[in-house]
Image (tube, rainbow, N blue to C red; front, top):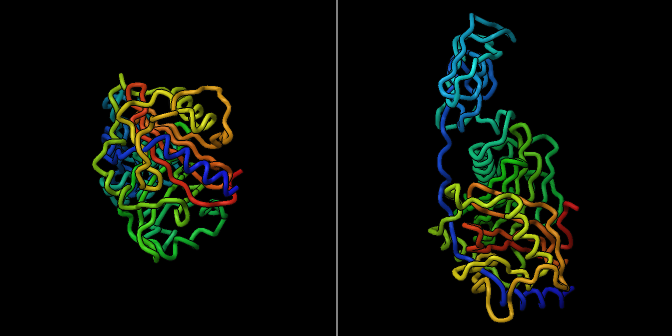
Length: 362
């Protein structure tokens, strides 16, 4: 096992690294649901906010998607049809809707996507996943899991070990200093590379969240405390590089393309560097390993590999062009690799790895 890790490290020095960084994704188009409640699907008059043009919910009914479709209803109570009116940006639809409860509900804070589709459980959006990530890191720094929408019985691991939510890193973590995320709205999961402080100083911190019906049901974390080279400042220094901005449609890869690039790489490591651009660089736990391609490295699809890894989870962010694969690297480290893809080429690779006997998820 140890020799495999040493061989892996030598192979990594031949393969790939990237100092590319976080920008905010383009804001979603807002729609509103007049007469909604103070939070998603709550009762009461007032107003709620829906991001991304998804149907609003709550008092006043749910308007169908489209440009300025609206519905109105008579006074309602309990579970009857809506009080007031609801409006949804994005289509002509006939409105409709269920809902007003008791009158007098408070208006929703427009800065919080309380009735966003991901948090309301109707559909998954980039804004909803981002909200879940932000809530998670805020709760982690506060050492209080109740401050995030974590489902009862959610599975939680640290470096492959299953633990109780609120234990482990929850006792020592500080406010996040850097984060970069891939958002997969098809499976409603996210992957984040981050730097957070804890009792031992700044650490590289990997995070996967799965969101179901507005609640976090899976939390996989990789607090990197043991690996060959660890450099949190190097990851923070990549913050000016652009990974998260939504790409023009002409440069967006398909899900199949994102997954194929990653699978070929894992299956043939260290000789699976296919479609890697000349400017591609690699970071591993924040440490620069060098160019993604170099002497003795190329694209060998189907070639023999002593590592032959298979990603057990693919998180594919088509809009931003980010592909993430979770695997056990060389059987000795819990790991995810994050690829930045633009115009069909890989322009950066970041790896987050930590010593572990298993992923905890197989």
